[in-house]
Length: 46
Image (tube, rainbow, N blue to C red; front, side, top):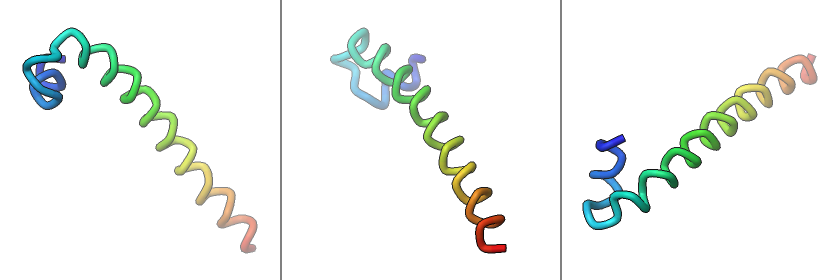
């Protein structure tokens, strides 16, 4: 968590901590969605 805080900036330590957590969770879901899209496209091209 401290690494994410340093990337966002030293001034907003507590403020940046909760935001990266939510963004990380969203990024994971987005990756899963993108991963499912190509799988659905391949059989469709068949």
